[in-house]
Image (cartoon, rainbow, N blue to C red):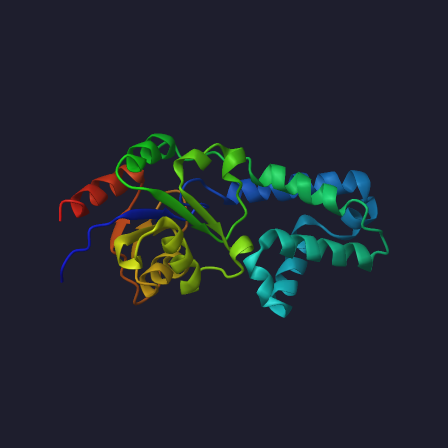
Length: 235
């Protein structure tokens, strides 16, 4: 099979460029504390875990909400406020507080130097199902394109979001590489859309195996990725 020289490199964000589980855990606790000061009746009735369970139940009933996790959280909170007879005056403030906490990520040590080196090789882009704000985080300048499911209206692994990102980057899917931590959403999703899929298998993240999915490469950090990419660009 003829090797395809990559012309663009696209990234997932959460658990690819930074660990997300501790950030979300901290953000949800801070969010609950914020709400307890303003709507104590809500937090007396619902713990952090119970509010999370409500969101998951809502998502089961309305799976379309998966494209915008902030909106899912907002709708679920509005529902919980309604159930206790509280008004929605703190809804916007609650969401702003959560957004601030959710963006308090710490990129892996290899990310800043790694992105700079990769950016010198190829144009970089992002395709994400999450709501990270790259401008707030301080990484936006590395990326030519930043496509989020919440703005696009479809989420990974739908091929359309990968194709839209490739179009925005000005490359055909077969000349793009997508890098992510999730075998189904990222690797299989990218491959089914015609891109090459690289599995970013960070050592501190629990990864689910998926039968039948064979990544085009497995990397443990951006240094691994750069070495693999440079080899591909020799063809």
